Image (cartoon, rainbow, N blue to C red; front, side):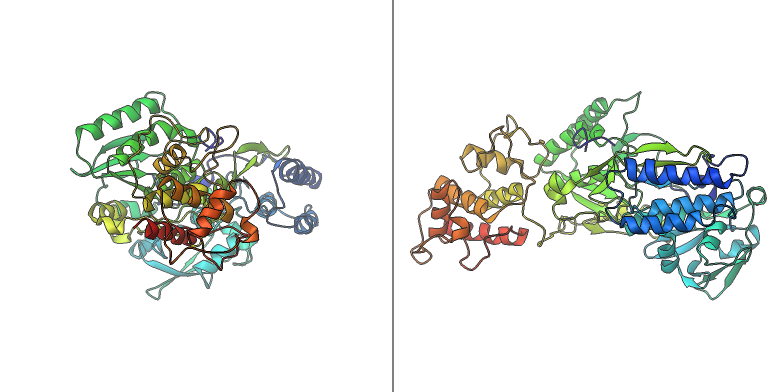
Length: 572
């Protein structure tokens, strides 16, 4: 994943086949000395030596405690147990982009089942032939514990920075017997109890890979009746009409196809949109696990123009939306588009820019973050959200029934949803940014027509929903920017800056004071220091600022709306 702007088939069979795709363990058993060397390398060279901040979420003392515990059993544990130990140590970083691969352990065993999540419930998605009648039944307990508790236990092994990503990691490894035994959820060699909502309990014996591969597994995919038009395609990206009103774009990886450069694809989309009469565009990121976030830029510019013409942009996201695709999803919100679907597996702010590593003796492979991506300093849409899973503006779960019927619950809902249901989430308590406040003032001023012949500031991206407001504010002398021609639109607004913008807006609109609201008296001390004092005083005297606010901190979006309402009232 690169820095922002240039920075910035779902499996339903047995998950173990995915986990075993990459061989990692050495062919011969490791000696205690070799394990110690690998453990030291992982801790000293990889986690402490190369990660941007390995102790951001867990104190170093806890790393050292776990490392010492591992060192105490290096001579007696199996290679598989050592691999799980390495995962446990790495998981303390709590970074979804930093992990040790579980795949390739020669002695890894599994139970013959897998699960899929629909809504807030878990269902059997693959079973042994003798349990075929239980396929699609809801699972309530694993090893006698609620599924949620088992997922939490998996969090000690799988590196993650949010519960959605952990849930996805659990689904991919929910049948690995060695994990249940390592976490002491099941005694070594004992069966796993899988309790169903219908009252039945499966008792599954652990199996080796050779035996597992010999089973004729029954899968939920065998019961699916066809595929929706929006099913994941074997393509980096594609586009087509869904209805006369809805145009659909599927973006499956943040990479450029060799046979279709993104600029050419964007031009094709632009032609389709010009030839049609679409009121909505769906940009589907549900199958996109990342790459380079800047690849999509030509397409976003096309969609920005379409939005300026009145078209709605709806981003479709889900738990597989991750890394660079997560950044692209936040960019959709920055454009004023709506995100619909389920929470993404990626966090808004996160460690990223992944690099690979391999341990010297075991050949265990993994990946490591090389930088921290603080999106709430880059995008107004991310302001105040931090390291949390990206939530959709509109929550729509895929249902099990629709899955079996070959329907896309989310796409069908979005096609039929009225405009008032597809609106961005409000986040009234989020920090108010400079760009958003200008957008609020612009709306209060009646959204005057603006000709955008060039970007207003050097750090404007060109897709922001509030870009016309920033251009208007610059033309009217309300926003003047910094010495290098930048504006820092995503930076949180101070009360003093709010006062300056309000005063300059009042001056640009030639507003006269309302005698009933005009103040007499000095400007509060927190607003009285710095430049542009005339604008601050004018805003204060006009009564555009509250008299009882704490002017030493920042503002929330809700407070910005109130200031814009005061301006609108004065205009009226």
